[in-house]
Length: 126
Image (cartoon, rainbow, N blue to C red; front, side, top):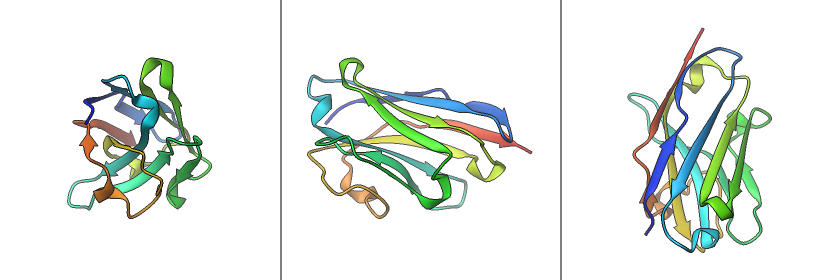
């Protein structure tokens, strides 16, 4: 497993942007499929975006398509989530997740990830 540390959350007005970062420990970061999930109070944790280890293919939840972008820098052991056109309903704790050699990426993959960060709060005001 890897240790994951998220950063970049904060308070932003609707329509604004934030970039989340997730730094991973270890020397085999490129072997990990990385995912971003979010959880609002009283709701289940849900998939937001993922990037597959083998080909860097990206996947997005329908509610963020066209607004969010996931990317990775293997030299820095970091995955990013660029969030644009933020809406109040995007308010949640955002969590980074990692799993080595995971080929299935997308919704309903929450329980496939073995490593999780502590989360970073994103609050979007109207």
